[in-house]
Image 1 (cartoon, helix red, strand yellow):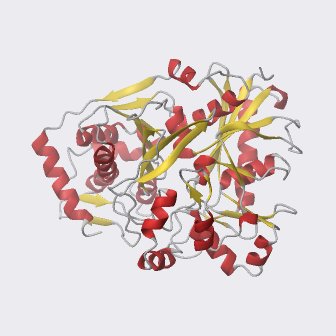
Image 2: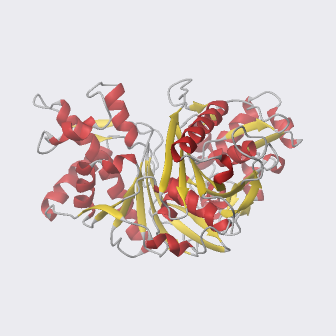
Length: 494
C-alpha cells in the first residue's frame, strides 16, 4: 500500500480551483478554494490565463494542507478533476501558454461549426465521437488557435507545442513538464477521440486540421501517470494517479456504478449523466454519448445532457441586476412568493445545449406584468434551471428505454432546497442530495486511491456514500403539465 495518510484531490473548475485533503476513511480533513480571473475579450468570448489557474491551484493546495495539519510527505497520491473542453496550448520547452485558454463556454467558433454542419459532417462526427458539432467542444477551439496564432500550426506539427484540456496542463506542471497525458473521459470531450476505440481518430484530426504531434497520450482514469517534480511545498515522487473530467468524476463520486443510475451536478452549468454500461449507445434525442470512466480495464459509458447556465444565472442576477448581495440570498427571496407569478425564465445566456443544441439562442423572460417583483424573477430563474434538467431527463429516459428511479444531485446550487423540490416535482421521482456536496473532488480522490492501493475496488465508495436530504415529488400531474406547457412556449422564443 502507498505510504502517506492522505489523498489530495484537485478540482480545477471554471471560476476557481478547490483542493481537498481526504483520509483513507474518505473524511475531508482540509478544504480550500481560490477564485481566478474571468477574461471576456468580447461578447460570447471567454478565456482563462493558464498561469492564473496554476497559481490558484497552488494557493488552494497550500491552504488545504495547512487546514489538515499535513505535510507534503503525508500525501499518498494526487487526483485531478477539471473543467472539461476548455482548450489550452503551451510551449513544450518552458510551459508558457501560447495564448489564453479558450473556455468551454466560449462561442467564437459558432460560424465554423455551422459551416461543418452545412457541409454534412454531423453524422460522421457523431458516429466517431458520440458528440455533436458545437463550439462547446475542444476541436474547433484548437483549430482556431492553430490558425490565428502566428506560427502555431507549424510549431504544432514540429512537436514544439502541447495541446491539452486543463487536466493535461496540471499534470504537465505537477510533473515538471515530463508527462503529457490526458485521460479517456477528457479526451472523449474533444471531438477528436474515437469513442469505441478510445484513441485519437485520424479522420477527425484531418477534418479539424489537428497534427497528432500536438496531442497528449490517452490513458485510463485510474493509474499512475507520473510523479511530482520541482513543486514548491511538495516532495518529489508523489504519484499523480487519478484523472477524470468534472462530470464523470461526480458520477463516480456519486457511486453510480449500475446502468440506469444518474446524477446531476449543479455548478456554473448543470450536467446530467446516466451510466449506460459498457457499450457506447447512440442518442436519438439530442444527448451526448461519452466515456464515464476507465478503471482497471473496465470501461463504462454514459449519456450526458448539459445546461450551460445554472449557478451562473444566479451570479448574473446578483452582479448584473443586483437583486441580492450574496448568492445564497436567492432562495430566501424566491421563497417569499408562493410561485413565479406566471413568469418563465429561459436561462439561455450562453445558448442552449442538449437536447436543443441552439448556440444562437439567448435568454428569454416571459409573463412579466406590473405585479412582477424581484422575488418572482428570482423564483423563475431557479425554476428555469430545473426545467432544463427535466428536458434532459426526458430525453435520457427515451434513449435508455428505462425510467430514472431517483436522481442523485450535488454541486453548489444543490444546496437550494427550493430548486431541489421543484426539480423533484417536475421529474416525478425523488431527488437525493449527497451528504458530500463536493462529489466531483471525491471521485477524483477515489480514482487516485484505487490506482495506488489505498482502496481496492470502486464499490468501497458505496459503503461510505450518504445522502443529506431527499426531496419527494408532491406536485399534481395537471399542475406539472401546466408548468411544462408555459416552459415549452418560452423555449421556442429563446
